[in-house]
Amino acid sequence: MTILTLASGSAIRARLLRNAGLEISVSPARIDEAAILDSLQADGATPHDIADALAEFKSQRVAARFPQSLVLGCDQLLECQGVLYSKPVDQPDARAQLDHLRGKTHRLYTAAVLYAEQQPVWRHVSTPRLTMRHFSDDFLNRYVADHWQDIRNCVGCYQIEGPGIRLFSQVQGDLFAIQGLPLLELLTILIQRKDIPG
Image (cartoon, rainbow, N blue to C red; front, side, top):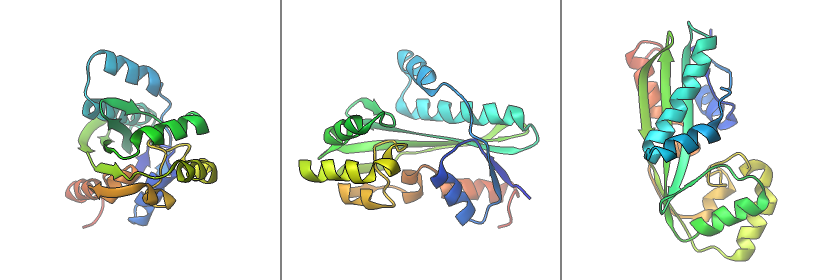
């Protein structure tokens, strides 16, 4: 029996949920993230609020298609020195992003919004901090070339659960949230709501 509908096409999020023993279905939300992001930034919204809003838009959109389902929408933003980063458009963009993040500390905003019967019942934003080391240009170029297919859909151009961990000198925060899902907090609310045994 499906417990949760994930409003995301993220294979990592789906794997985290399934590894936690949840029965899920996957139904990616179709929203214009760039337009929403631009609008919210123009209104002066914080990265925290933008990530939360994008997660809610996704959850709301899918909940309208599955009104009796428990729907989870998620989003993740990266902010470094006042600049917001999205998924890279190509390899040169990935190299440019990683070059800017090199040697600096950045923050991830990992948002999740849970809808039940087309109403928001829970929301959470985790904010891990990560510091990239001063890696060489050669390492940067080889990393992007060798791992492009894995990092092309990742905010920050890394998958910390793989070779991307070699980019970092320090990580502060929950590993699940860094991977794109505040899993422990989600499981806690699902247990409290009695959606899953616990």
